[in-house]
Image 1 (tube, rainbow over the protein chains, first blue to last red):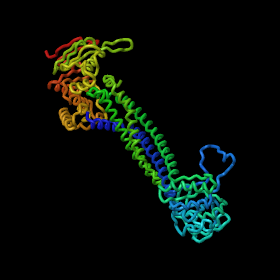
Image 2 (cartoon, each protein chain N blue to C red; image 1 turned 180 degrees about the vertical axis):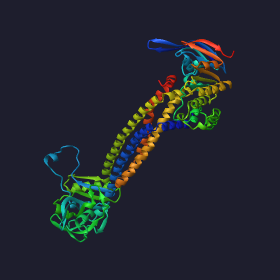
Image 3 (cartoon, each protein chain N blue to C red; image 1 turned 90 degrees about the vertical axis):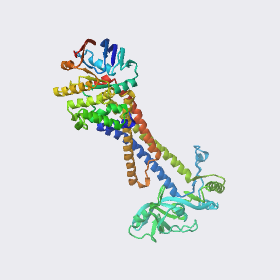
Image 4 (cartoon, rainbow over the protein chains, first blue to last red; image 1 turned 60 degrees about the vertical axis):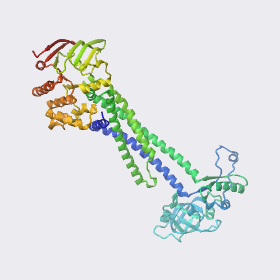
Length: 402
Length: 226
């Protein structure tokens, strides 16, 4: 029997029992579509996080007060010793390294902002002129913080677009004075709406000079120091220099944590990749369930078509041919199921991208291949039993439908 | 030529052994027209299934065209059935989802014949059995007589040497039955060995040789030609 004849016969069988075929197609396609959709979500989340980190800036070294320890309860913890403040002078000292291109000290807090009778809670970000370029943000109007001395607490602010809309409405914001806590600040710039990054919605922040933020928030210690290096290769020397400089300035105590954006990104990447594999694996279980359904339905089909199988034997079909006929039918069914699953899954991903454009939910290539292979293998394995059962039928009894 | 030597076919029913065929010795020459008659349970169908290689003897020897069927493996048996034996059943056994043409084509499909040759042979068979206007109809769109004609076309499409018919007119009206018998006899006149299992004594008289079976044994084996 020719391969094309097995396919043709299988196709005729599938068309002959449409309701059964549709049910099995649905089961298989839902399994495949689930794998594609869930892995696309996981992969989309991973891309999103990667993108967010990229928007933080390139070749970025982040300095945080306090040392990350994994040794449990240390002596310092028990004695109630807190890390030393990370000061503006510490940040200033780090500018001496030749590979440092930009540096932005950062203070963060929350205060109430008001203009005339409008009020809202806002996130205050205290930093310097270089923050804008360092974090690849853009201004919608006006100017960013002045390139003054870091110690100078100028009463100026740059506000996010949402803050501008909520406080000023139709009024012009530039040049207006707003109240932040007890102090007044003149609005000199408005951030562009697309400025978003991890943990910070730039639309909803008010950026003021770092010295002003320290005073306003009563926080002498910096929250972070962001350092941009000249190149990727320069990151490690800058980290070494940072650790050494801070240790010297903090009387020999290494009480800061220095991380690179890559390290943080890698951690997130690993977590999200594991998550993607996890959800993909869970979805693959539905493929196994679909396989079991195929087995059950094929077993019923063999029972229903006992006389047909008996006839085929009478006409000269060997056991092997009968097995191949049943397998061809199951493989065809699986392939159509996969195709339908791909159509549903990819359409679903397209819908997800429309609904959540920032997520970019494209299924990874490995998920396409894996769902194809798992579905095909499942379909084949679970149709072996019905195929064997059909092949073993006694033709005389089968023709009598017994 | 068909040669059965000391054929026994036993079935186990509970604790009892039923001798469906008991020491059958039979030789059927090429081109013979043999009717097998006898009461229900006499072993007629078992004999037919054994000759058609759908069933196996418990003991004895079966030669088909001088080849020992009892020594064939499953694949050889299937091939021999496909090439040398045609079946016509009382219940037609047409596959309902296939058209008449596709049902007729099945043995050629199983033989691995290419599509063009298949089509040519099927067209010839359809024309010969006057089914041209029914070729694309499904079995449920055909009358009983037409269904049996499709079954005959399917049974003879591989040009077998033996045609086995189990109550071929059992489900047909008188006219359709007569037509079907006419077709089978024409095929026999062209050289095919025709073995018909029947309850119809009239049909038994038309055959050139009549076998009567009782309790798994051949009670009589008469030639009708004289």
